[in-house]
Image (cartoon, rainbow, N blue to C red; front, side, top):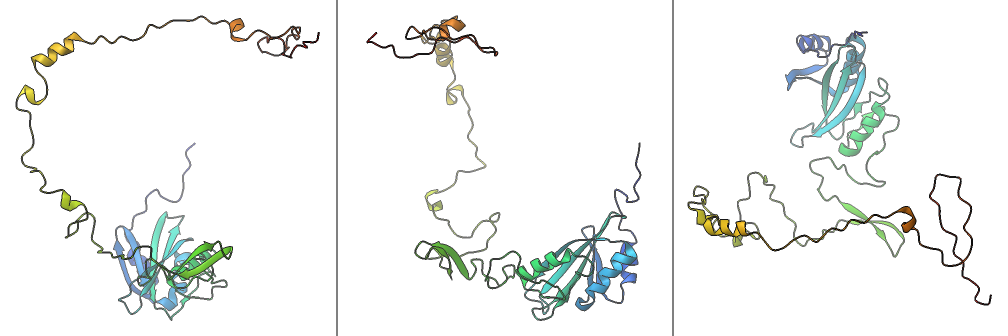
Length: 285
């Protein structure tokens, strides 16, 4: 029996951008379609009103993800990205808002309870504060962690490192000390290559010309020829060893008993018969 669902397999974006833009025009800064996705940029303080409108009036029932992005050159360096899904339309939209380090973003935990964990993740990694979140704590980094590791100005090696101290029998925190005396990065693409000679490449010398491939112009270049064919026809004196086929029965597999104890009664199970158990014979007898 074929089951028909209200949600189509593929939902077109045709007309959706204009319809949603008109509905949230009071709070909307910019709307566009990129890579087949609808993106709406709204004012930071109105993000909760926008998401409520999309949920209640346009059937985008689920909050799938909240992500962050850092653009240090902008006055409002952080972007908070909300991804919504409509189950009845099989359609997704993206809503963005921008903020800085001091301005909090209104929480949407009153709309979707799962936003509590997602907002904590953005707060932990970027330092964005969500006003109204009832439990805004770090969720991915360790206790006592300093800074926010997804910010572009956060060092790749961090500020502190932890290790287990055998002397103190506990985990200790220490300033980062690089094992290398010099650690520099040129940030060049591995596909483009570096503009200097890498260690070891100076031994390579001049590379072989690519436009002058090596070819075999005569049979002697490949090792073939009449002499090689004659040696191949002669064969070799080596011969495989003679194979002897042995016919081993069940009785020959079990060793004979080592003394004169009588055989045990046959087992009732599906097993082979065994010889009598061994027990050292008393020499005194």
